[in-house]
Length: 284
Length: 343
Image (cartoon, rainbow over all chains, first blue to last red; front, side, top):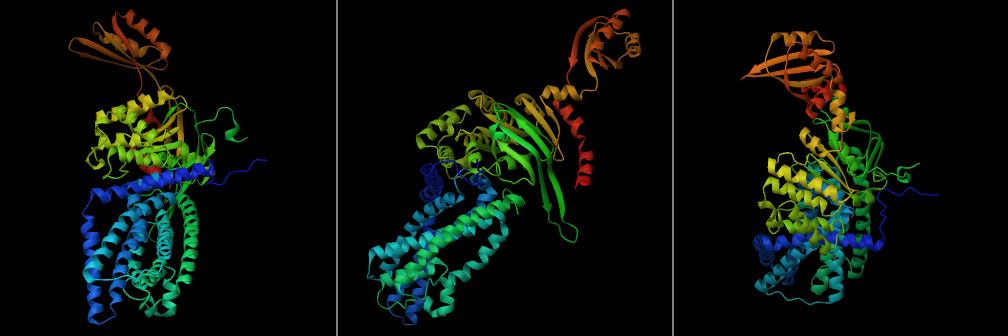
């Protein structure tokens, strides 16, 4: 008896699929990496300008006579905001531009999953963003004389990686909406950016928002990721929202949830968009 | 029996394919259902360059979107190399590529070579193989000197040639060309057409489905064509078949040594002569004959000889594909009226 394969059944072996996926990711990461080298203006507006915002918050805390470690909290928040913007928001919004340029059609026609294309965007974005984050932390720390007390490097790396992978999953879920809608998602994304940025706690402890709002905000991976990293770098003085162990556990769950959710959401929305005829429309 | 089990697997096959679109309007009853494709059945053999002709909105691009897995049919089936485009999406995608007219794909910041390499990666082509193919393709479309040029610096014609290379770098079995030469100058369009022909000759299993508004392009490139109007295939065959089938009368052009009014009068009275028109210009006499059947040219020539007409040259006037196309789909005004009725 023969069985009819599913629509996205790949006739390739898993090794071939993996090789194709990795090549796809590398291919899509390349323009992001090369643009960081060829368009160096980003060094000004992605490093100098965020530093100004960090300086503003540091000055507010100093005026309010907050404990000195708060300067470090703000610098770390400012550095992580770069990942938030580049890995999550920019990756999703990029599909808006990819649709307009006609790239989206070509990506969808390629045999690898769109998640590999998005992974390429995310990896390319992460590497460029890492440079930005390192420069912000180094410059901020030098200017304000911040000292760090690292509790555990492996734990810090683990939290950092989990946070970024979860951000990638969430960003992919958001990006999948662009297959069906375009301008509507763009407007929605712009609308929720500031409120979500607020509850993530870039420049203040999330605990101050209370258990209910803090709990809801924990669905955004950066909230707990940032809280855990601050605990690992400033063991004294940070009003932690949850113990580190719990935060790592929740982040791991979020990683699985968002990655599975993104795969499901892309398959579901792509099918629906093909039925509604919205997948290949450039203007909506 | 499934398509895949047949001995001769068509490169492209559609069976009663139908696609409807719901349009959203403002106000009650403003929403409409538009039938973009209606019971379209086609079979394109491997090794064929097949043309799909039709006016804007006829359904050409809708058909290509379905075959390239970007759109689901409302009903009916579509197969690419025996693979169902709705059920075997990934295997289909590994075998196809598409180039659209006026395409702006890729990234301006990349060089030509980088851009082609990037797209090769999406199909899992190892870098060494990709670079070899890129060199060959750029050479073939006369852009070898532009390999390290940034994409944003290229002209429209160059970009479209790069788009063609982009599609071919993954070595597809079936290439979909959706108005690939639209907006190109004569030279760039010629390079695209020549390379498509040469690419096809390299491997007999390759297939091209081309949509175009340029009848001469279809006539020059395609082994067979189909004419689509309001989502329905109204004719298909070789371009010569189409021209012949739609030619109402056999037309001939004769050059005569001298002129006499009796020539035309006698010819018009001859059985099977539908029309005869003569025109004298700079000492040359040109006679145009329309006959109900091609073989009636012999009696017509005999009649002409009887009245003293001396024929210097005789030429059969072949109808153009454009004439055949217009006869099949009507003029633009008819189209708009019937289009509204159709919706």
